[in-house]
Image (cartoon, rainbow, N blue to C red):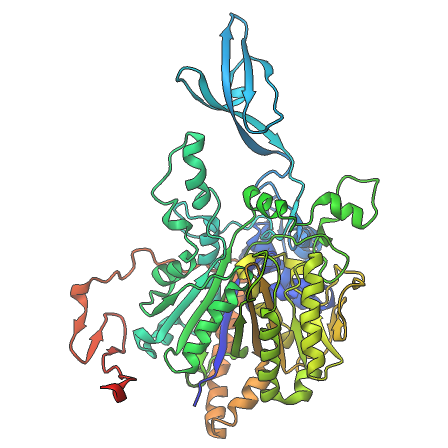
Length: 638
């Protein structure tokens, strides 16, 4: 009997805000929500962006003004909303108008009493010409000086980026200030915040969960797709020596793509269970999710944390994608809208999935999903937000360009539809399922992905399966994009609103639409309308995945056939307290009263502290042992 992997907690941070308790989802459908929920969204944004502080029942602005909640959101509500979603990159990351370049030079100098004269031959571009400079201080033009015959040095230069928009975390949010970050790269700072948010969102203390599970029955699967490429990670390692700076001992180890999983094990959960990192470009999150749910279904694990944390908004990564022609540049966006009388486009509409578009918009995000097998969830009274019975992943086969799309996504989507049809029937598939598309906003994706979706949908008799794409609001967070798709889809069953692709005003003529309904506005279907969702990813290199997500109602309907009425009643009674604890965490987070879990140097174990026999291993701090009675699956070959 396969165990059903159920979602019992989720959290993180992206450009829409905090993910737990559906806060980020609610930012996106903000205009359709009742005023009381809108107020919670704004108050949450006020605290995480450091625009206000809650003390003694009142909210204090940065100017020291004391206001009640209603007055605060009236005062700064619009400003808070403007600090979220896709927008112009804020200088808190870097100045998009003055990105520093360094050109290698040969320097010949002569000095008079009044000034220094230089003839500088730049060697970075073939058409550079010798240039005469007259300056008072070397530092005016040089970033480093190395004296060795002719001076080998770097000349400072700046220029604006042609890509100025991104799905940046809410302006003012700084995860490094919430714990002892010790020069951690931004992606790992986000990991600590996001994974902590997911654990606390469950409403069940982690120590209670750990007491019910053997140490080797836990798993953490997480990664990002690029690595930590800012100056505190791989970026610093690659640049420091070339710029005459010191490479630190942290640059290399903290840059690895598996570090989000390592940080969760070492500093948050203290897990000694299974660990793994699957990397597959845009499908990275779903690849890690697949590993977790297969382990839970087979009984190998009882609890798993799946996550990702990508912080790719750096000049170097943006330039890399831009030179591929993958990003939406300002000039191209202005041309799309036929605007000639302004310098910059509306950056909030940079990402336009399945419309006339010109490239994707990069984003940053940290997302974490806490999964259990159904038996443990029922025993603990866990909040069940939905379930994920399967993820399908396939490669593209032979291809010419490694970055070009191929056939693998036809396999993943068709198999996911066939699998889902076996669970909820054909009517459930074609009438009560929505598709959360990859939806990058590139001209190539709108054609290729729409053909995949249309071909699969019509094969099963569908006429108008709703298709939406969260990247329209969040940008493309690379390997973590699947987590954005998953967690914001869960909100549909909380508030009943399916977010539309509102940045796209019309579907492009070359988009395949048979069997599909590309939803360009938010629509209220009701909390119990959809039974399921299909989450799709088609990434560079032939990394394709489609996840099957079942609604909480559909999940409980299935579990009611596995458990007796008495067991379900007992579960529901326990769930009252769990739900209350989860909401108390939510309100505490809104008030800014909670900090991330960060257990540095906490309960560090050595081998001498373990109790080992030929039957089991007992670890201090764990109630249950590691069982060494390991089955030989090949006993017939003895």
